[in-house]
Image (cartoon, rainbow over the protein chains, first blue to last red):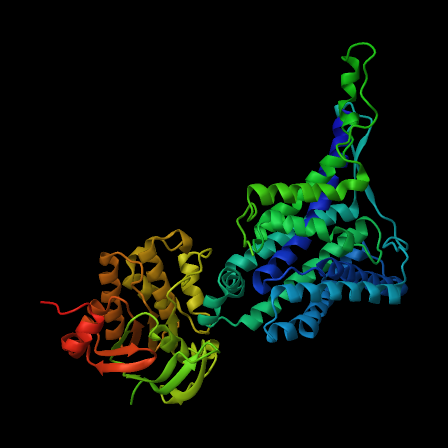
Length: 334
Length: 237
């Protein structure tokens, strides 16, 4: 039984966490691609920036002596997401909108977003230094242990409080996004614009408004994802820059421009990565008893060493592009 | 007073002009049809009205206002609707969502307009929850026209509504165009099926090489031996 619980802890929970973060990041990437037709490379750093916004707010609350029954990093999320949305609008207005107004090609905007990436990282290092920070200096990170002794196990299923919030908030965010995209006029206009930009203009859809709404959603979801990632691990200037590639892989695997595809792609890449680095030896250990004498399982049976986790996203990406170039949900190909 | 009139319009896509001083004028009671050989600038004339390309000379007056070079999104609330020839539906949106997008600029309740569109195209009502991309060519054309009607336009611009349709659908679309016109909506359309279109047009404009060649009622043009010889495939017995 311990093997099963080890599997739950290491694969189901970790995969769900990683998948949630990838999914929220990939939704932003895919929405921006659908509306503005360029790969927003700076999305990872918008996540990091969002996490830093949350961190600053938490530090303020701690200085004010505020305590809460839930982690402070979760408590500040609504305010942090609003600030991140404003920052995203500012980044668009300052850097991307002028290029669009000149009719720049998507590749020019892509290069501009790489510039924004370097700029955000530089600013963060300038003001916050290169060190690592934790959201849990002032408060404890609660860990829930579910006793499994009734199944004859000696290990517990363990999950931290931020992780529970993370999975729950991702579900809430996805449901709200679904309601927005299918139930509101602006959400439908967003899908319409991603579907056929020229016809959207001809129909009189306020495309400038749709662009702003896109940045608000992408920016606030990036803040949510970045904060959750920082709550789960630690906060550092290159926090989400390191996962921008799996996030793009998730968006492409799901089909660029397809929000639901991005969510599916996020969990697919997240679970694939955790499964690939999982040490199968731990689960297969009972087989040692039935193996012929002199045979035994190796200590480490992971498919990929942990350091090479990123390659998994690329393998999935290459396979999907070969087999189904427009992604699982048939997104845009250009 | 004319609902829309183009005065000596010269326009193009940025390079050399395609239209050279075109004059077109129709009333709200008219179905105007622009015919002519390929490359005559028929679609260009429609697009110049809707602000989709640059008018370098001349002026366009709609409903008493000069709308030369106005952007499309400002023209929809003024009462102009445009149905492009291709890619004229949102394929990933349902039929009803397509119609809803046509009413984007409206702030009032548009449920009654949607009912009118469904009454006009009963096929669409049956398929209202289906994605527009799954419909047949004729049904897509109905969605496109329905979408354009959702803003309650005064003038409907149609770019080759019968392109690629079977004769049965073509006649149905033309019949709907005539019916839309009877409700007080002016129609200006470009057509390849010139003979059928001129048959029910109240005004016809023959363009060639970006200039007016003939202008008259639909019947006049059909009966004109020069027009018939040059553009309608010879005399009909």
